[in-house]
Length: 379
Image (cartoon, rainbow, N blue to C red):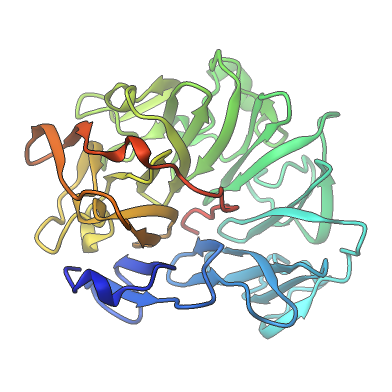
């Protein structure tokens, strides 16, 4: 990752970490000189990078365990891959090897976000309507009395939705007034609900233990991460460190604040099966959780689990703009700093955490244009 900086285009590069069918544990990098990435998504062992040069421009993508969704600026939604639970939304359970248009969606449905779980799919429209389809064995698409559906169905609680995330067997969404709702598999505390509410896990339930307005949510395999206006909360299973709460709390159903990053302004969150990534407003990236296969992006010799947010020092020469976490890998889009000093002073450097103290002269940096980013957890 130390190639001469002048070789990298201003548009940036996509970096990959972890286990994939293309490389075992070896970081990779590829550049985009013209068609700048605007969206990333990771599934279990596949990824999607959306750029902006095709005649029918792809706007969004979401990767599940073995299926992929894309939406275009023209208003179409396409699906391909595994379909044993109807997760392609095509009205049947037959596998597809090429992209097929989901006829349910029309020009009326202006898609804002896509998400994919293990065998589930979700689409959120700009006017706040949420549609889900696929496997509902654990209630993870919020339809109480069905096991699966092969065409999109609207999920509603009577108010518009602003964010959706599908995990392995649970899902969560945020409403426009900042409330968080969860549903699906209730084990290991990943719904953030008290025991008396778990009986209704097949329909969306309000998480009342977060006292702030919620902005984003990310669902992993057995954990959930929540971004509010002032903090990052986590709950669920954390035996690999994916909660970022240290080594003394491996499971919690009560949302807990990650105190180690209180001094950072987080702008985006992403969950894989057992790892988590955070991006700050100035383009720094923190990762934590399962370090196997090098998927935390912390270096070739650092495959250990990390139980608190750890600054990815390899990206200090870059502005991280997009990240997506998959099953055993992670994909990052970052652009090089131009015309700013490279020196950074650290208040604390040790084997487990890097905490930034002073930026020189990073006060001039901004996060630039906000690129639309949605996530898909490990599926």
